[in-house]
Image (cartoon, rainbow, N blue to C red; front, side, top):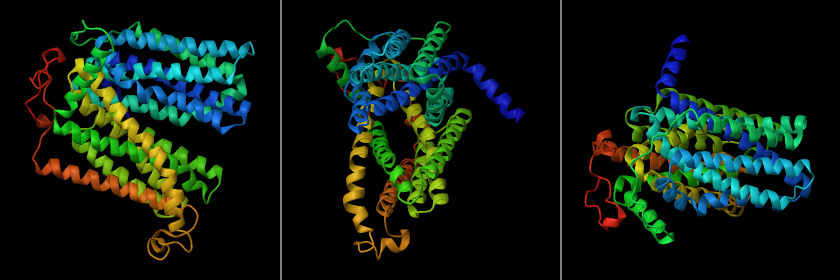
Length: 460
């Protein structure tokens, strides 16, 4: 225990500026999640309509899908610390406005649509600017740990926000929750006054207008498409997010098809603890010296977890499978970001990371949309007592309600497992080392600026 504590203190000292930055932004993120849950409850209680609640979620998701590439181009042009400060400030003012409207009995449902859209817009700027700032704040060998800390705050927020929101709404009502969120933004802003985020070399930003922004987005895409390794990684992570999107939809009916809501809450709490554990492991470990192999190994383990979860309508095995799957998620996401952040020159990271987020986000959305039709209309009937697969697959995973969902989760797990193992073997037998995969930033592999209208001849 003492050795682990000493190691943690040593890590914090080495990345103390980033740690202070992370601490303030993590509090802000948790506060934002509290508000999100609180507003969802308020909207449903005042409308009793799922459609109204869906619109809030829609307006929260829309900016991240549509405008993130533009945000990435702007992040590369502007000062990243200033972007984060302004985004925090605007989000804080939106939260304060909602609190004042609620206190004066003027809050309407349509106000939540506007606030969700604007807060999501601020979040898009924050996400890209913070991701691009990591490489400027910590040494390359600490980027994995820094990403682990970022995943830790996300995991803690996902685990605690629903519980805290319910308790705080009962104690201080929604307006009190909004004021707590506002105070977390103030703390985040104060921490930013005590640190300095180094800026990369400025790009040529003399041009103005949407045409120049589009050219810069295309330039960011060229940094991806010019290297086969980037393309493979982008496709792989899109598959991962597609499967994650499907799993998000399937978990609830998988458990509730044969169990109670109380049991469901217990299973998800244990799985959430698995995610926190994975974040802590990544924060201490950093992902190892060869991040690409770590990514594929834990992705394969994620697939095994999904297979276990879908195998039987049995709470212990479902809990075990989800816990394994959730444990790997922070490590997968952290190593993925580490690879991109150490592969891409800092002055281009805004554009590249935003395109990564857009493509994988579309994969996530597609997974959300396709899960229900596949399960309800195809696989559930096939695994009914008189279904097409009842005497084959049904003999292995049982038949009845929820078994089509379980079978779909098994298919997801097999896709992730086979893809991960195949790519691991591909890179391993090509005898590729980390230096090949991740060249130093001073090597001349970066695409020339768009004003030069040149193309890349070096491939990897």
